[in-house]
Image 1 (cartoon, rainbow over the protein chains, first blue to last red):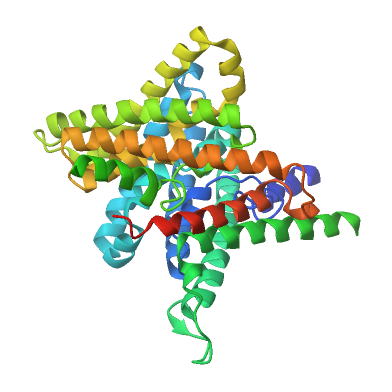
Image 2 (image 1 turned 90 degrees about the horizontal axis):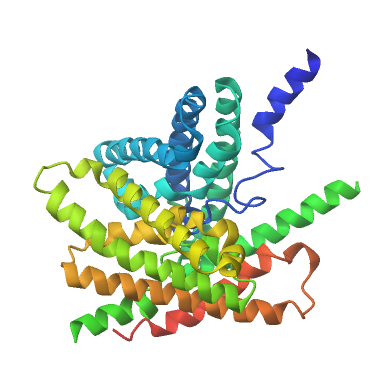
Amino acid sequence: MAKKKTSLYREFVKGLWDDNPVLRMLLGLCPALAVTNSAINGLAMGMATTFVLLSSSIIISLLRKVIPHQVRIAGYIVIIATFVTVADKFLAAFLPEISKSLGPYVPLIVVNCLILGRQEAFSSKNNVGRSILDALGMGTGFIFVLVVLGGIREILGSATLFNLQILGDWFNPWMIMILPPGAFLTLGILIGLGNWLNERKVKV
Amino acid sequence: MSLLLLFLSAAIVNNFVLTYFLGICPFVGVSKRVSSAVSMGMAVMFVMTITAAVTWLIYHLLLVPFKIEILEYVSFILVIASLVQLVEMFIKKMSKPLYDTLGIYLPLITTNCAILGLALFSVLREYSFIESLVFGIGAGAGFTLALVLMAGIREELELSNVPKPFKGAGITMIVAGSLALAFMGFAGLI
């Protein structure tokens, strides 16, 4: 009994760090790089992705015995695309500004390898409860990385965080950080730092 | 002339990988060897060109007349998935070694954001049929270019002394950053 409990907890926690989708498994890199020029965009993208991940995980783990093995990928993608349409229309209706700044990257959640990867590796083999925990953990890990990445780029690139000015006038913003190269550089350094921390943890 | 500009803009100035961050997964995954990068690039370019044509036809002849644009994402992704399946069967039949090198990344072209991104962009920018075809070829060429450049750099990188935590993905991202920086130099071209 006790063993089962810890493993349920593990299903959730593993997404936060040990199997963090972006830093450890390198999934979902496209949105992680593309929309993180500010922390708020990163947060919105992370939430939208988590919504799609959670809903499609629930549906797919419920249907896992019904969907024939050969056409499973096509089936998953249709389910995911449906939820992405929902998320896209929701953002356009209620948060038009964010929807505009995310642009085509909201529909591109359909092809976020993170979502399809979790369905294939997890939801198609586990029951609904575990799939929900897994999706929530992965989603939280994804939001975490996106907000950190967006935060770093926003502070250095426009001297603000969540649109509040935090660095004084003495600071000359590094334009490059909110442009594409800044995304690659920041993520590269974050991945390196993640690996370094992990190694230290293992040694201790 | 404007078609040529469109091609150049899709291939170099607004390179899909380095400015739109589309197709990063294969960009990181398959860029270890120049030879496999070339074949991956070719496969993507092929799928992209066909996708551009087919999705244009579907959008303008099917979705718009019946006013069901809301099905855009679902129908596009289905078309792409079946196209990729077709290409996969074709390559498996024609060249087994190529099939083995591309490995898991071939089915993953389905979830290559560059392909769906291409279809979405050409709807968003209201390209004509010919324009979206040229856009598809250009984007595919740009993807191949970025992938091959990256593979070339990574082959050299294997011989150099990279700090341990940065080995693999970390240094790849940083190299990609410098490549993106270099590509920004093309920004004023068009």
